[in-house]
Length: 108
Image (cartoon, rainbow, N blue to C red; front, side):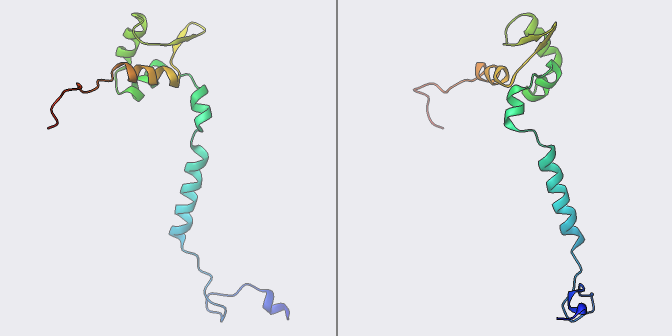
């Protein structure tokens, strides 16, 4: 083995091309960035959402969430003086609106 055997091959060398597909690198970089920025399930379970954030998750307006909190029609918790909703509260709100088909309904 000689020293030249340890050098990386050049693009025109006999060892093949070392050109790396830049689109592949960009896609891999993007995927890694998305994975690192994603919140884990545990952190979402512990997080308290503002009425604005909860409204976006529920597909409602912030005003709808605030009015239902004031009227105590939906579950929530106080963190200090501000109302917050946990992931469990949001699941309960979604379950409150569930409508099941009638037992004897005709299958259309």
